[in-house]
Every structure is written in structure tokens, then in C-alpha cells.
Image (cartoon, rainbow, N blue to C red; front, side, top):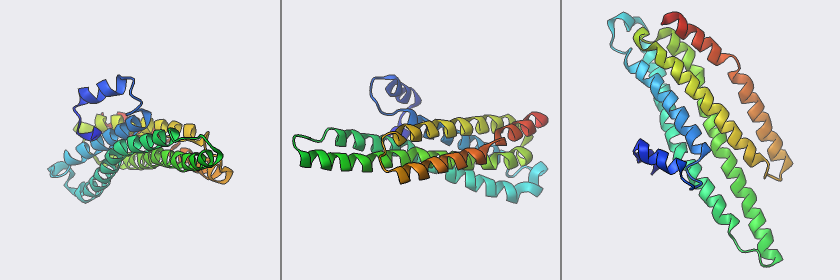
Length: 207
């Protein structure tokens, strides 16, 4: 399991000629790290006398950040799984028309699955970004820089995931599905516009 690897081992594997893990897994890992930093800020805020009036809010945010972290951790491995499934299908025989049709059909299913994973990474990374502003405003001031790093990581994860969706879109033949995925990408992009800047503005004010 990738999530159980030591950091050095993961990086060594990432740098090797093995196609997995790749950019999709890195996007999920980056999002998970962003969420983890938000959780850290939450944990450093809960129980502090100075922030006791905000404790209920912070606990709610901490619950969200931890749920997102776990979701994104699971997607690290899921990205590898769908890629390996796709590569296995690419190796199917195509010695006659029947085999070619079956292989082509399975490729389309696999490509769609390969697109769905980074799309989910983008969705979850967007949710991480969504909670950053409130944590930036209410979290422990002594750890506020970590919210800034968290939002930067979450945005990087988001855009990295979108790139991985787009490369799979190129192989999808169903125009209706391609259009639906493209529309969701556009919608997600619009939803995060300006949010990183607002978070960083609060973070810098509280440094």
C-alpha cells in the first residue's frame, strides 16, 4: 500500500521508470497533506483558553478536515488501481474483429474510471479549500502559517487533479460524457476562484 510507505521509498518509486505512482497519486497526496495541516491547526486550537468561544466551530472544521484527509489518502491508492486496470486492458488480444471490439469497449470503461478518480481528488481538494478561510480566521494564531501552506497545497492538488482528468478526456469517445465532465471541471474551477487569495490575505494579517 502506497500510503504505508516511508516517504523516501515513495519518492524513490515515484522517480523511477515505473508509471505508478504518478501525477494522480501525487495530486491526492498533496490534497491530503493540505487537509492534514488544517487538522493540525484545529488540534492546536481545541482546548486553548484563548479560543474557547470558538471551540465548537473548530471541532466542526476539524471533523471535516479529517474526513477529507482520509478520503484523499484512499484516492492515492485508487489512482494506481485504475491505471493498472487500464494498462491490463490495453494488453488484451486484438487478433480478430470480435477481440478488437471487446477491447475497445473495455478501454472506454477503464478510461472513464481513470478520469473519475482525479475528478474526485479535485472535488475533495476544492472542499479543503472551502474550509481554509474559516480556519484562517478562527484557528490558533501561532499556527496560522500552516493554514497558508494548507490552502496552497489544496489548490495545487486541485489543478494537478484537473490535468489528470483532461488527459483521460482525450480518450473518451462518448461526447455526452466528455461534455458533462468538461462542464464539471469548469464549474469547479469557477467555485475556487479567488478563494486562495482571500485565505492568504487573512493568514498574512494574522502573522
